[in-house]
Image 1: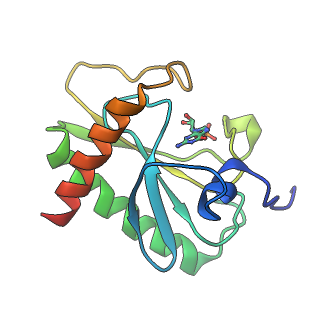
Image 2 (image 1 turned 45 degrees about the vertical axis):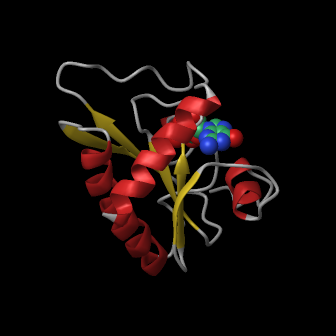
Length: 141
Ligand code: 5GP
């Protein structure tokens, strides 16, 4: 399998070389809003360690990603008055992975409202800021 390349977009976000709307950070994980959300409140959870995907991440790093994913999912239910949450993770381009730094998609869903197809609509930054603020507030509650 190909090795991790630290020039990917999310590695640059982690190093502060590219901007993002951060909603959560701890020692091993980082979470931020997806710029092309498939549902209202779609965020991404990533490890700070360089891992390409589920196939190469160290178990202890993935445990922390799972923990943060759960935290974000529970807060997103409240923040966006969601009826459910879809967690999605792609490993390798053949599966649909575009950014080659492991990420968990956390997508709040409303009953009967389908997800947009991947990467179809670049959201207005003001809308994303509002969604980030709602998620941060729910994480603090
Ligand atoms: P993948 O198909 O690799 O699982 O999905 C990558 C995700 O990253 C997509 O949902 C896409 O919208 C998101 N994305 C791509 N570039 C950026 C970016 O520069 N910033 C943020 N916040 N999200 C991005």
